[in-house]
Image 1 (spheres, rainbow, N blue to C red):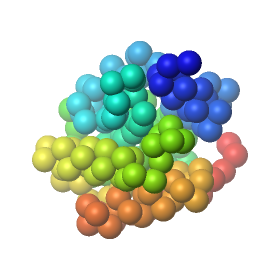
Image 2 (image 1 turned 135 degrees about the vertical axis):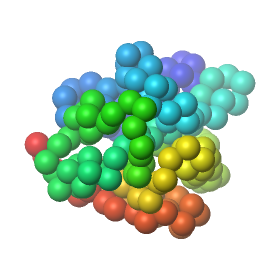
Image 3 (image 1 turned 90 degrees about the vertical axis):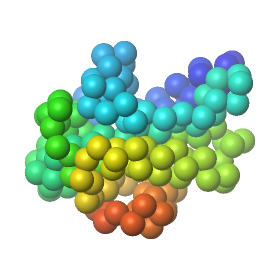
Image 4 (image 1 turned 90 degrees about the horizontal axis):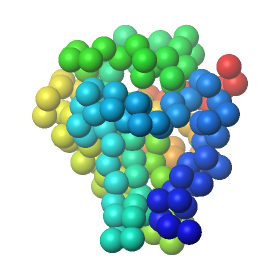
Length: 160
């Protein structure tokens, strides 16, 4: 099995996005939309045999961030409602996946910090936010917030 196939399997097992219409399901169309929002929304590390880690972030408005945190909109709606060519004050730390044998090396943190830094060059980012799926994800979000010196907000796990 290739690294790419393993990453896709890991994403499907962990996030169950394909069976949850409230989550962003990363399709070719979604990847194009993310690139139009900002080219730094998706980052990966490739070891020569395919990706060993990838991260996805969604720059958006403060208003949409607050609606998401307040559970008024879901993840898929957040992406769909984010305006193209807008001014973004917040970045949603959407997902970070690392193959098991590459974990603990700071790869996801580095990729996320690079994405935040790149987006901050073009937008007045004041907030980071995330949806808690795991304790590892929570620790990662906190580390990225500390490293980038950007305030962090959390959406609690909910069932819509």
